Image (cartoon, rainbow, N blue to C red):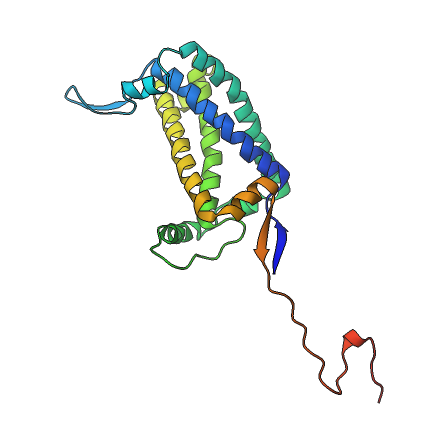
Length: 240
């Protein structure tokens, strides 16, 4: 028998879905900014082995020479990104949802088993509640990544006004490297997250939209009354 069970609250779903288009715009506008100083590559003895984004990539996405547009979008949507992140963190803290999200002492070991199960190397899945061990680690890491993006972004945006913040990030150039690395982390997280959603199936995806999921529940079987026995369900007790 299938029953409807509540899984995700409204605020949890709201911050989840709002964050997706915001991060997409932030990554796109960040690429517009990065094109103005495409500095990161692997070069040895004057020969470039790997360029993170070749020129055809920028032309294909119509990215070249839109620095002002990229900065305008990036600095506008960073406020939405920050506010949405703060709202999410405060909600998880005050609602107690952080207990479902924070990794446990054995989460890293179980996350490896989850990975083996997803790769069809291991047949059984480790015990899980609302989130499995891999999800706990990933969802906690994305919170720290968001905090790191805001801090390094401010250090890059106002290196003079926030000189102390820039110093804490290791200087302007290192802060820019950290900001770039975190952005690549978001892209990697998106790819894994979408793959996991497809693997989990429609019921899981529906729960992130509606907040409810259908779960299989075994019907309660009450023992039959034996001849000559007393049953509380009868509402009668035989007297001696």
